[in-house]
Image (cartoon, rainbow, N blue to C red; front, side):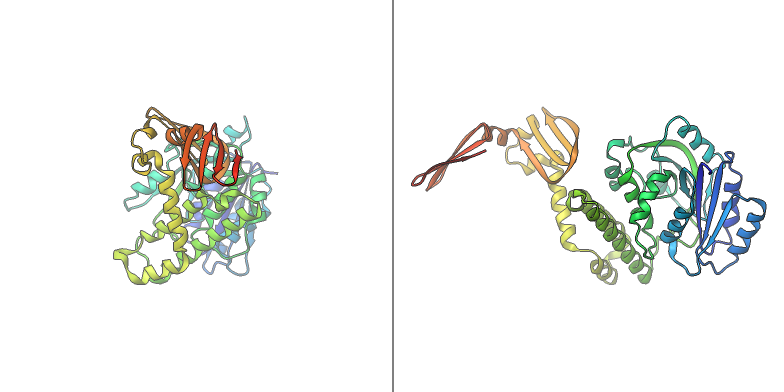
Length: 396
């Protein structure tokens, strides 16, 4: 059994497949298998692949009789793989020939669920934002909360540029739906994989070579036609629905919490920002697929969760939040003491935010509230209600 399985989905990339396969068969680490899944290409890709099979018996060739798109092509490759670790290379991209060797040098000391490495972007356009988003040293990743780091895009939603332990991919396969999905299939797969992952390490070397200007994918989508925009909206919404269904199946409270709402909103904004001058035709399409109520719910939650940034406006007393406040959201406990902000991680994801300030803390230690028919006394977090006609009741 090879140590590494490299899965290459192919669809009509005859112009680029040779450079891709050259980068794989010439890997300096040789204990690999290369699984090429021809997703019913109609060009000369099959002939080119067959020529490579003649010179390298590590290539395993699988052919779909009908086009199933990238998600299911990868699923076919996953099922056929036998390596301990799996990585993915799009057939119009390349892998640095030292990639497998450098990953081997990491895992020979310790097994990891995911090994993430840098990407070199090849383009004639200005790709500063893309280059920045793919940098491996943008953040220090908290490996105890990998799914949250992935949802928040501190780790890119790409299956390429990473090696995955086969055990993680085996769990992933179970939850990948048999649907034709394009332009957001990476997000769905990546989030499910990170949900199951417990260990993670980053290599800062740029080992994946991303050809941003070529291919048949949606890489170059600065100008989007109405049909293509609807195609993207439909696919992204489908991917979000499938991820939500996954969370429900495994009974994860992320499904009704702030994190999923944030993911939903970020995908909505990704599409919304592609609309020029608020074009009504494009707005009608995006509003057809995305629930405005969920967008508004996220914005309200986001305002609430960002109290540490604007708590003077949100809380009536201007000074108390500066002296002391606690905001509990998702996995975060944010404590502010005399202006110093401390973040502590909680093991449970909270579906509703909890805000504690010095003022409400003091009110729970001791406070008296009177009304026409009753008086409420709070002492050390116990509440005593004095009904003027019916006597006393109390609760914690």
